Image 1 (tube, rainbow, N blue to C red):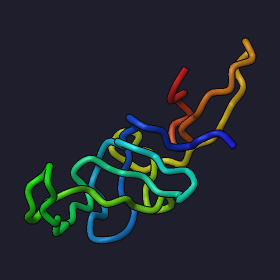
Image 2 (image 1 turned 30 degrees about the vertical axis):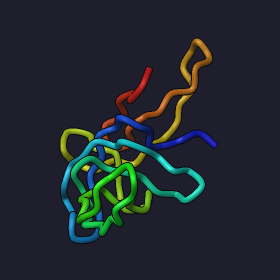
Image 3 (image 1 turned 135 degrees about the horizontal axis):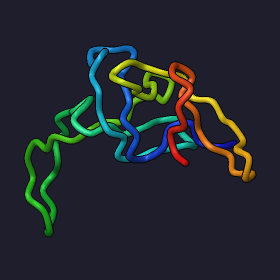
Image 4 (image 1 turned 45 degrees about the vertical axis):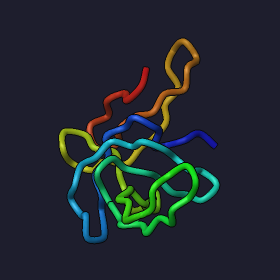
Length: 103
């Protein structure tokens, strides 16, 4: 199945403590149905010292479930649909505005 949300998309967080924040998708994990967003859901991870890296508290982004984000169109969340163009290409379309997302 084609991906509705891809790396580099601007999305809005729909639920949770980061609700309403707009961020860029840095990674998509389709098998886990999760996305990694830049600057959202930052957690403190306690890292053990190894021979190559220092130990301490490392801050990093944790993944969010893909159902909790929606594509941002004009700062508002929008669902994603698909449409076939006249030349045969299948493109993503924002349901809110009808505009082609990638094409």
